[in-house]
Structure formats: structure tokens, C-alpha cells
Length: 296
Image (cartoon, rainbow, N blue to C red; front, side, top):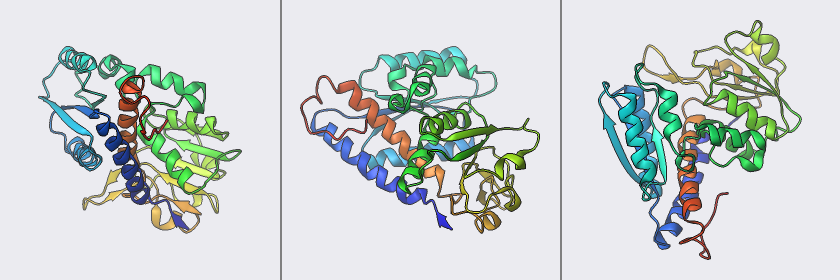
């Protein structure tokens, strides 16, 4: 068994982003990420802290807009629209989840596609469906999974892949990106009648549900690659995934740890998306003709 070490791979990615940001700065461009945070949800604050730390490391400027829980959908959309028009801002991130009274789809839809570094807006998702070559700004967690598999030379072409979880931000886009690379993909979810009958045949098993120990040893094929995307906290406060790591790791050829697997990759891919957005925005003017390392 070999660990798919997201901490290691993400660090290498952040060094590459730092280099790209430095080249843009030499060209007179300062990449900037604008973040919208509503309330003080502990999980959201933790994620925000990780993203801000990555911005500091790579040299991407961070600007944060904080709102009370009582904020309205209209107020958030107005802020997004101001950021859309601000040419100094290259990426806009709306930290989810938003309060129940806020209509999240309208807020996400308000983000201009060229600054949609989370990859949640319909235009960027739609482009992803066309082919691998149109995966420009895609959701960061699926992108992180793909980059982790690539790093460890795990070819998905022709492989039977099972994705457990069909959310719009992880499961669905991950399935499409895997199909773009020639995988045969089965998507399972809470309505799937016999989950084990699918997972036990998977060459590559990706799990993104948020249910501790959902995947047990008998549900996994010998030698399978297991990508645990879930995040759960035990009674003692320890972070664990959706997979029974201790026992499943005995059968897997590769497996991600939690923490230290897909989580750091998600943050690194957000930094890559922000750099990409800045490069593309300035490509025809300031950056043209200069030695700028592109990631697209």
C-alpha cells in the first residue's frame, strides 16, 4: 500500500503557483482573490484560514468581505457584481455553505465565469462537459483528485471507477473529468440499492459523502486505488474520512489519508485557478510576449 500524499503534492503545486505569481508581478500584475464570508461557522473559518495561508505563501493578494448571518441574497449579489467589475480582482470565492435563507444558486450564478475560481458557475461546468481540453476553471476538489492520480502515474483510461456521492461540487464534476480521461464511471449515492455490489468491482474508488466508515474492507477490491474525499470529525475531535482507513489500507494499492490527502489538493487547486484567471485576464496585454509560466 502506498499513500497518495496530498500534503506533499500540494506543496509542490504551491511552489509552481508562487513562481507563476512572481512572473506576473514582474509584468506589473498582482493576482488577487476576493473572498465572501457569511457568519462565523467554525468549519468555514477553518477552510478560510487554510486558503488565506496558501495565498500568503504564493503571493496572491487576499481581500475578504465579511457579512453577518442576516445578510440577504440581494446584498451578496450586489457585492459579487461590484467584484465582477473590479479589474484588480481576478478570482471571486463565495465560502459555502451560506445561511438557509440565502438562495445560494443565485449568488453563485452572479459570479462572472472569468473570475469563478471555485468552478461552480454553469458556464465553466458546461465547458468541462465538452472535453478535457475545455477544463479551464473547474471545481477544485475534483481537480485535486485528478492531479493526485496523475502525480502517482495512476492511469484511469479503461479503468472501472466508482464515485460514491453525486454533489454538484464534487461527485458529478469528478465523474465527468474521469470520463474525459477514458474511465468507465459508475456514480452511486444515497438512493443506490446495493452499494457494495458496485464498490467491490472498482479499480478506483472515490468517496465523497461525509459519513464516517461508510466504506469498509469487504466493500473494496484487492489492489484498488481508494480516494477518500470525505471529512468527518470524531467525538474526540479527530478528523477522519468516509473510509475505514485502518482496514481498507490493507487491501488497497494506493489510498489517501485524511487529513493530508485531498484537502490540501483542493486548496492548491484554488491557487492554480486564481493564477490561471489572472494569466488569462492579462494574456493579451501585459503578459503577452513575456516569460510567464502558464498552467493552461
